[in-house]
Image (cartoon, rainbow, N blue to C red; front, side):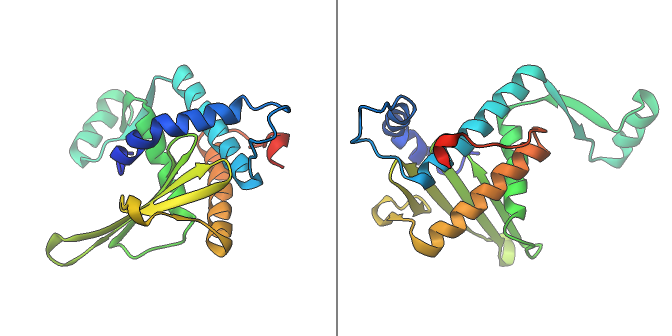
Length: 200
């Protein structure tokens, strides 16, 4: 997904280093404390990223439905199918994941569009857009950044007003990521999700 890509690029070197420390932590480094929630979120991201990579390595195309009814009919008659094979990309997989993520938060009005997805080891996004009068769109992007000891968020790229996610908000976020992880792994990648012992 492309929302807040500038923020992600700016924080990527720092967060890559944090994630590397997390991955390589050993028993004789007690100063590096990983909270149970962060460990769980890192594990969710790890398993999703691995599943994406495995699917991309084993499958080069996917079926995209032909929208135009005329071409759909012609394709059905001449080729025996009403879809076209297109290259499978990480972006396509994240789009599919984000549709599952959106459904976690319940039904919306036709004018409201939601997405919720895992971007990488330490980044989660919630995006909501509402169609307004005369084509105007009101939108909100919530960026969740996973640190070893906390989850931090900012809205619409406003770094100066970023806050730690706590209490009920953290509970809701953790529930959403757990449901997302389970459904994405089952429905897109055909894998029954399991978590490493370190996050339990």
